[in-house]
Length: 420
Image 1: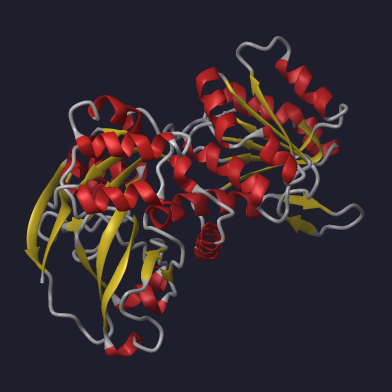
Image 2: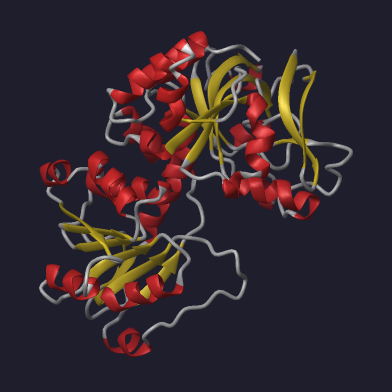
């Protein structure tokens, strides 16, 4: 079977090509990819080429398919896995396989599996490590968003608190406690707000800060104060750039006790140091945003570390259990990753999008791998719809969904867009 895919040959050398997939082995699975969201990690792999830890040294001679946030459907199952997987099932994957200690991962290391492809062969090790995950929700884009969402799930589970009088740590956020998400209305911050108010263990107070009022207003229209209240959470949005004494106000919201759980979603020293100052006794600070500087530093109050038991944790990605939790909550309708998606494109848009990703504003760039479509912002649908009936309809669908992407929009696009 032939596939079309974007393959990496070296630094900044991405090529959209058509080539033949090998015959399916008994321990492999053939699948069609439908959607793949583009991650900054793919940009890093494309820029670094063989210098990237997950990219093979011989990538120039044996190119790999990029993309690791994908969702699709199973077409054929090798004999070994027929008791576990069925034709027609929707699936996604956890790319961090950790197979026999290797860093190899789909989207970085393999010639025949990656998200930026029409058809793929899923190798045995993905199933052996239980990283091929069935998705039972509607549509496909949520399955693609499950991997980034799992990063947020993981960071909540990584939080910890001490037990008075013992050395036992309690994992997770404080139920009914005070939580702050700083620089929290970017794509991943929106995921964190969604998860915080819809998971089983929720804070009593959730304060979300940023310095961009437009983005704060957008977040407040998606995750409303009323919706949070229905789930037992007092949600407060604060623009720290325009509010005088914002930090003092945030402490007043806790009656001076401070915050049990603080998440920092930007690698900005003043934001981290503010988070440290906001911590209450036994408070946990989570530094979520990975910096590009290898010597990035911020000050930490060690007086409070010693006398108030404050502490810090960092996470990078989620594990398989986090991904499964994301998929289950999406299938139940408890999480909606649509707020992540700001752009739509076809397989033909992948190369330029990946190589220019840091310069493209907005959130997730969602690729539908079987169509031909330039990368297009959802905000531009209405203008394009003046001359293009497809975008006119997509604009109408998104407008009635608070400007968000949806399963209805996905289905319409897949039925009406040009095939690649």
